[in-house]
Image (cartoon, rainbow, N blue to C red; front, side, top):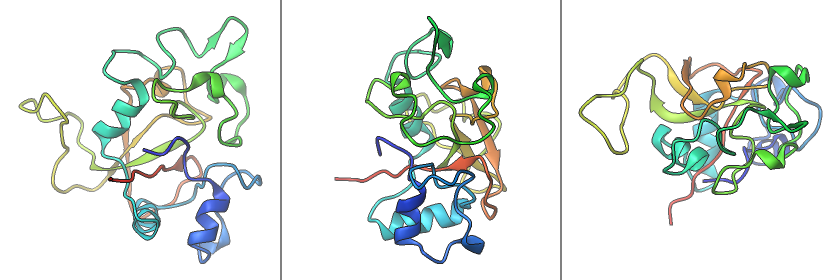
Length: 185
């Protein structure tokens, strides 16, 4: 899984004819690529030789096998005078350049898995996982919404926890949803 979310300049390089020429809620080229639908994120990943992460892969990269609340552990996102993520209390009101909160990295060294922007996952969204699947659970085979994980710059402390999951319409781009890529070797 990518160490960083796909950045605006990366997306524009591979997919120059993006939606209305708008990619990103921030002017910085190293801000996360946003306003990218799930369909366009999937297309980007395919063109780059990868794919979107499954929801289970995303969560594993965010917290490993331990039950941490956040990628960096169990202490709150503002700890000992430092912010570990871009979320509502930072009052940025927009995404910031990728990697700005490096002390909030996951056990795998992945940055921005809490806050900054939500991230698309491959799976269809359902309110609950299938109770019969204990390892690498999969969502439904069809649906109306795709899974997003990680929270965003306007999310609460609860919404940037590793376990928080929501759904979004896959044919729309949103100002607070980006994505990262997975390569299979």
